[in-house]
Image (tube, rainbow, N blue to C red; front, side, top):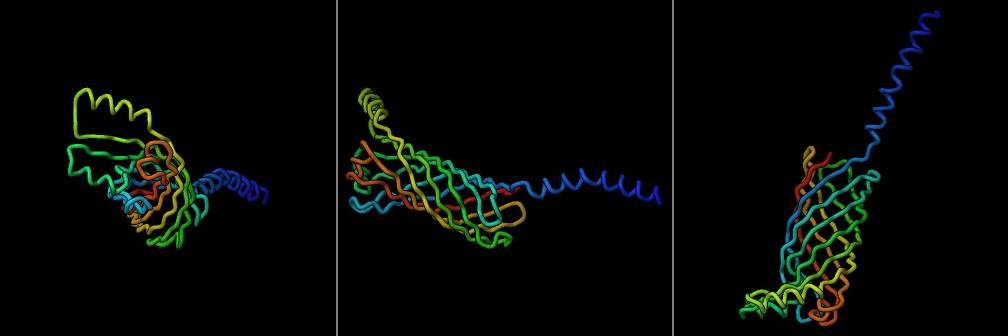
Length: 210
């Protein structure tokens, strides 16, 4: 009987590290990484909104609970200029307002164990607005570009969005929409009639979960 008890105790002691390791693995947060691309359009109150442009970037999501993720995103919007400046396409000059941005936030997921997962999210970050003028060369262009560089602005950005993730094994397809409000000042604000930028973003992303 004593030998049996000793054997059971030794077996239990040996099993503890394996059980603890399994618990650690099970409780470890899961992450997903995604690259996305799409297009942007605006609803600014100044002369019919902002121009149609492209967007691309990447998103990292980390599970906090089954239904909540912390997200971080970095990307670029190629052109959010007011549509009034589309008229410059009929001239040699061309003006664009691209924006690099980074933001973080929270994503709320419905049906976390389903292969089809709707979600909504809210985020906050900053956008680096610049003003690019093209269509001419030489010394004048260099002077203008250098001068505009001093007028670049980093502005707060608020975002909300929704979408659907289609999960197949570790791979996922994300179809979504984002609305971003960028608080503008300086030249970008002047070019938009003193208004903030309101940018709609329709995108599709491909990612992997691990």
